[in-house]
Image (tube, rainbow, N blue to C red; front, side, top):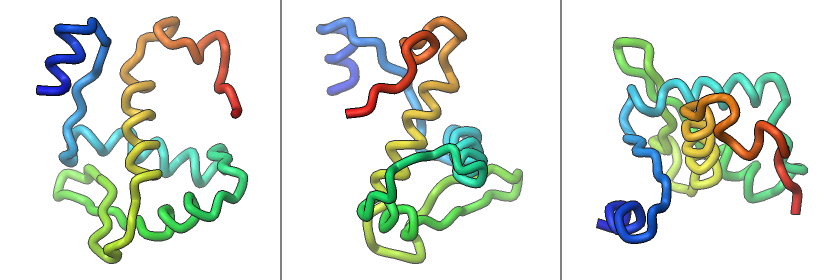
Length: 107
């Protein structure tokens, strides 16, 4: 209902993204790659470190992965938000994103 209202009433461009293995696998793998390449900079934020430490990965028989907090009942919101942002970015065609020309702004 909220998404429909934002699209229909306000013309906000939104991309649907499921929370299952198929939808989450590519951006989760991309985040894992960026972390291993040390390309995710969060200035050693204690909350980000804590949430990253709460994440585990689940894999389906097809090799798709998604994040899980099955080994922890603590928050993983930071990681989930990164994956959602990456998924949206990965779905953009080159030139469709402000980040293609401007880059990320730091506050």
